[in-house]
Image (cartoon, rainbow, N blue to C red):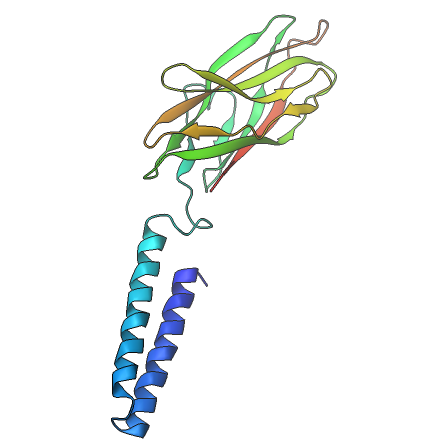
Length: 198
């Protein structure tokens, strides 16, 4: 049951008790009952407005992953809640960096600026990796390093807070390469997700 449903249930029960009690006791305490009932109605309206504006954090994220030009190319699948994306086949170059300019986008669909932190949910890079860096790029082309893996595939950078203004769409850019001798057919999976710093 959602918070808004719980709120409506509590209010319904309270109204029933007030009206039932009033019927049994006649007109005594009628003024107090009206005041209490008015307070409950105001509380219900306030809760409803908060829920609709995104105040219920568990049900709505103002930031969402959206497809970029390269998302489908690398097998990207965005989750139903749009806060996670899984890439089935990230294929890097050997010895020299490959740059994927628009791996996926992040869009602020909310009513205010929001800060997010991106992390690696899962990946299968190993010792074949030489370097992998992921940047969050603003519309003005300002880049922030948000994820980095070392040459053993270990995550050494993540959860970097970045503020995304209202209604802006930012791009995730990936840069990296494999060690010398890695087969050109090598590819790896990668899952990214983010959390909003409320």
